[in-house]
Every structure is written in structure tokens, then in C-alpha cells.
Length: 443
Image (tube, rainbow, N blue to C red; front, side, top):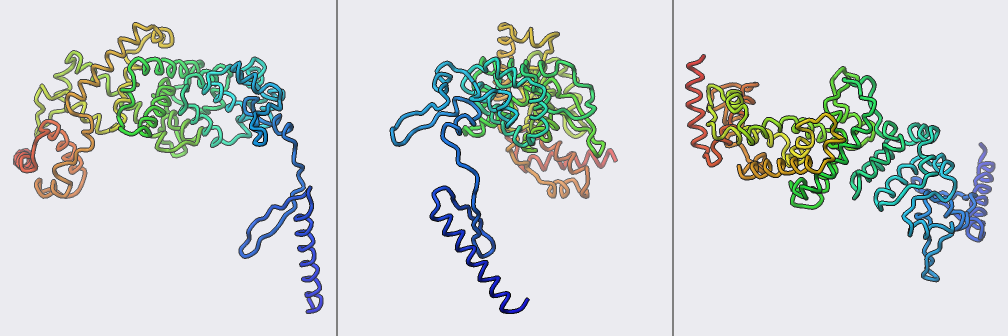
């Protein structure tokens, strides 16, 4: 390009930019949008019409969310004509026809459920009909990202009434849209899995209110208690599928609950792992419960815990068995105990039998007894206790090289500390030296 031609083009471009700036600064009907580049600000003219306040109100998801506050008159403005009335009556209604509102943004279905559950409001019949519509469900499953769905669900589970929300999700036929299952679960998911899951969280809610805040007292700060509560509801909801697995891309068996939380809802991996851990610990608690309640299978459990280097005194079998489990589940042991009490002993029809107050009270009393027994054994926080000897020290005392044997002795050392809660490092070393002599004789 010749020098003169280039300068002319540059000059015309600058004139155009100046013209646009003048227009956007002085025109009442146009406003500017700017975006920063590496070294300059570029301006764009927004040609979208600004709707009126009334049009904006009718575009809202719900009438109770369409109210405006007029700062000039210090008053509420109900431009849909029914927001205040619906608020007084406790109704969840869409400003425009519900189906059209949901098809415009299918996530509004879950928002409607969340607000209904939070405020204990009622979904109107036309809204429920629209939410149950196959086209709306299809759009929700295909057009809304899993992250947005998961965010709404997590807000429900963190709110005051998660049971109401899950019952709405079930009753509106949205359960399998929201909680997508993996292909080929093993064993196959039962036909009424949505009803079983919702029933379990409902019973868990009732049982937790009978017991009180003890279930979530594992943490001293409120945030940790809220986290315990939230993951407790997820664990209760997916209790019916706690033993259901599927094969992932690497042909590895993965729990379905893990898949739903991690892949369907796109929540934190740590949430998925913790729910699976709670389920696993809840299945180990029945043995501890029967042992603490009636010394059932005491000899068998002692035989399993004993080995040639460490014999567990009969009166301390309970402490060792419970301590080993608490070291695995840590702060969430009360939640795992709660889920175990919720699930065992199994009944023929959980949804019918467990709603009976006498059955709930029996399980409440069992929970309180076992929790008290564990705290009386001074096991709450046992997972925080540091081992008296680390791996390097064990290698020195036992005269062994690095390998799996170190892990075995670390486990054995933890059991020794459970048996000797006041034991010192010197006493521990002396026991290990005696064990070393036995080991050499056995070899």
C-alpha cells in the first residue's frame, strides 16, 4: 500500500471512530459497551432495545421474584398484578404461561422447586403440569449444563427443607433427569428407585429431628456442621443405591452414588468420595453396634484383630474395632453411624415401617447409646493422634527394609496405641523389640 493511500485510510478510520464516539455519547437512545484489548478500548453500539419495567417483570421466572422497589416513592411495585398476592398466599406461579416460561429457560423448573421448598410454598397445578411435560423435561436434560443443574440441586440440599425439594423432584417425574444414572449399573436400578431415594431422605430428616443436632456436632464451627448436614442428606438420598456400581472407561468398578454426584451434578470430587466413604463406614457400623449392645461375635472379632505380635484384651475389643473405623471416616463418623442406624436392621418395607414413630424412636435410642459409648471410650478425635513412631523409626527398630511390611506395622502400631492410650514412645519401642524377637524366631 502506498504511503498516501495508507494515511488516507487511517484518517478515515479515525474519523469513523470519532463519529461513533460522538453519536454514542450524545444519543439518548444508544449506549456504549467497551471492551479492553491489549492497549486500547474498543467501543460497540448496543442496538438491543431496553424493555420497560413491566416487560422485565413478566420475563422473570416467578411472580414472587417480579416485585420492584421504587426508590423514588419508597414503595413496592407489583407490575405483574399478582406478585404480592401470590406471596401472601404462598403460591409459586410464573408470570407468563408456565410451559412457555420453562421452555425459554428449563432451569426455571428447578428454581421453582427450590423456592417452593425454601419457603414451604405450593406449586400451582398448571406449573406442576408444565414441569412434568415431556418436552420441558427433555429440554432440561439436553439444553441445561450439568453444572447449572448441580448448582440448583446443591442449593436445595443446603437449604432448610431439602426433603420437600426432593419430593417435588420425584413427584414431577424429574428424578432421573436431574440425577442421571450411568449405563449398565450393577445390580440394575429398581423401577421405583426415585421413590425409595426420596423416602430415605424423608425418614432421615424425621430421625435427625428426633435425635437433635448431635448428628452434626462433629465440627465446632457452623460451616463444618453445615457441610456434615449437606453430605448427610446426599448420603441418605442415595442409600438405596449404596451397593450399586458400574464399570468406567478403564473397566474399574465405581459406585453409582459417586457417578451421580461427580458426573451428573458436577459437584466436587471430594463430595462424591465422602458420600461413598460414609456409605462404606455405615456398613461396618452394624458389627460395632451389635458388639457394643450385646457382645455378639466378640470372640470372632477378637480373633480377627489379634495376631502373633499383638493380642487385644477382651475388654478393649470394642475400643480397637471402633477406633479403626473412626480413623477411616474421621469427622464424619456420626453421619456414618446415623446412616447405619437408618439402614440397619433392614425392614421389609422401609418407606412404610420407618415412618412409624415407635420404630424411629427405637433407632433414635440406638444412635444415642452408641454415640455415647464411643465418646465414653474417648475415641472422638482419635484419628488426630500422631503415631508414636513413624515409618523410618519402625524400620530401625524392626530392622526391615521399605515395603508393604511397614504399612502392616503402622496398622499394628495404631492398634497398640488404642490398647494403650497412655502408652509412651519407650514402651512402644520395647513392645516392638519384643515383637522383633518373635518375628526372628518365626522366620
